[in-house]
Image 1 (spheres, rainbow, N blue to C red):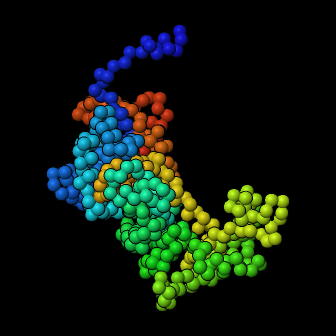
Image 2 (cartoon, helix red, strand yellow):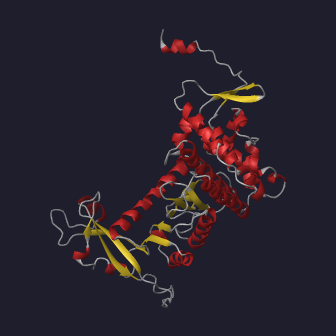
Image 3 (cartoon, helix red, strand yellow):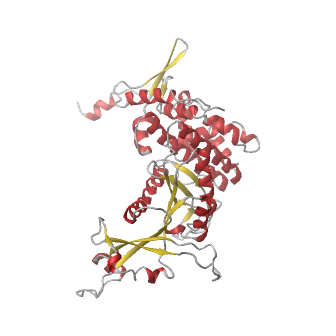
Length: 457
């Protein structure tokens, strides 16, 4: 019998009132319940008017929709249609209700979700999801979220890339990918717009959450500003910030003596590192001397310009001729950290791992677009994305015993498994497929999550 004939013999009907789609969301709902997420939402989110009723149900609807793979407001309807509400522990709001709820947000209401995320981070750390007593490194970065059309507040103007969108700031735990803080900004913002305030809030959030060990902030050259360095110094934290080849640095770095360079193991042959003392930001924008200018360590990595790069940039010698002097690319950064030069340079390069968290927010969650015309609503969408993102990482750590994983992996193996509900002896029984290879993992994870202590209210 041909395959087409065999498929024609399958009878399809929608008549099982006990089937549940995305049954694995039970893990996320259980962890949220253990951390008191619903209570935090009820306590802090106060959108005015009738739209503000039951904020916990509406916010949790968005969070669980994001975990299930939804990336727009209409996708929350899948939780209702698939009877998933039975394993979520809250009423699933309709898509129209969620849309009206988000559009009612002002920016200050979105800041209320920041409070929820901050307190949730502290509770997760207390439950064992993070060891904040050890040295903590946090990567600060920005990303561009493209939008289309002219109807979105804060995204109507063209960005420097020639596109329209938003330019949020993110603070991400190095190594784990947890989001420590997030802030939506208009698309035309520079990399470091509002960065000093964002850094102060991030440090405060980490200290309130229970960070007691040394704290290091890593940033790229977009944050090479006096106010950023001053904010780090005022908070008493260490920093590692990429420097821009501008002003005197254009002449100081190439003039470093050849014997000061130490070769390093790098994917480009001939790479080397050197260190000098440097006092940045000695003058303000008006040319006046600054009294708070302090020397820092300037560490530079140089890499030879390859023939292909030289041809593409026009920096090499004419074809068929050898350059008179080697041509290098320089990658400097400033730091006030202690330690060997080569170790600090290697650690600063690890700042690039922040892109993994950004990629997961955009392609694993719903941050590749912002769904409402309201700036406050889109700021709330960003905050809910970060909460959902963190829940997945905490499930992997507390329930599955895994390290860093992507949301896509957990969604494919855990969240989207189907189930069937039965009721026996006044208890609800969720049945998973017998041959589902990750069923034992789900059962063990649920046992661990349910054993977590509930926070004191």
